[in-house]
Length: 594
Ligand code: FES
Image (cartoon, rainbow, N blue to C red):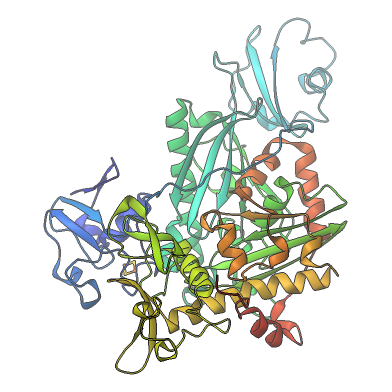
């Protein structure tokens, strides 16, 4: 059966005998299907409009309302459909800011002809090639299966002075590598010319492990319950996703998979463990120990990739701890954190928040569970950044002006809209610094703010800015929990570095989600300290940038390893006064009404 999703010009095959849900089938095909519960049928985000075709009855369960859920639906015929929660920009942010390559390159290819000069009597080819190619050794296995012919030209592929492969010289002699950011939700990759450093093509995909859990903890739990079988399943899922990215990138660039000789993988510590098929359970239990932290390197054959040369190298980047992974180290390196003498902060705001402060030659990091509220999830009017979502608002002349994606009638709040509404609600005096929505009875009947305040039958207050868009007291509490987690992390790092916020010269916001949060919202809601105002910059997918540098540059590969070892990690939950810091951090700034 054929499945076609409006907005994606791709037709996916569905095999009814597989018994898979529509959601599973599309995710496996690498499509960014909306959904936050990993297909468990609890978030309702995978609802879709059926344009053509038939579905099994269970697609229409209570949560779905009038629309079917993709994670409950089994196609009964060819389908055409449109998701309701399709993101405005479903493209994943593949790249980020990165410095130019400066150090010696890790890769080179050298051509040589098996002519009379090379084939001298009284010696052997190994000795001659070690001299000619200036390498420490020339392993015999690279000749395996190769026809050795006089006057034939060959090329040797060399990484860090290690000869990986030997083959007859081809007309198109380019060699390629992939820099991959393995996110918990998405994978972002680019194909790179290993000699010039040129980004030849880019691709992204949903992390298929999402079917086994939306976050890292649920994936660890999956392995805890399913044991070795679950681990294998998660490893295969990521391996297949990487293989599909290789196929897609090579097709785009019109090159052969057999020309791909290197991959560098950056990701959080759970993702890199799973990619290498290493049991992540120690990461989920006290004392939260990673099995490895240093960068790993293995052959494509050992990693389990089939279409690229078996001697191609797969490298994972170094990490700091169980919860500060190689994605953070990669981002910090790409943002210049290995340059000593600076004072700066790197922050990745997402369901998990990770942050790192550099003070000269000292580095301290922490991570926190911020939850999904800042992404507009678990919020009563929350939705993805899709058409109809309020993404920004302004309290002006006694009313809220809403900025809605696609210019449509407002239908909900996406993450940036939630934060903007709280910011403006605080400014208008409708929300107190403790996060309480004010009592409408405390306002004069003619007060222009009064129509925005609602109280339900049970006395619960909300702030309603459009017929279908409101922020309840419970929503604000969810945001306060996320804010408390992130701000307390920042405060702990500043204190550990004996710095005031004003002494930080640069605040770098990394990642897919953070780029949508306006500086005004981050500062005026107190998610970040006032002292950071005017110093924020958004650096995109810095994890991918670090993976690129690690793949290409010898100095970067060494520098990343050294940086990872210099970063200290603070486990917030172990701090004695953490509850007090958290409680204070969850308050909003006291603002004056203007
Ligand atoms: S209900 Fe969450 S993905 Fe379907």
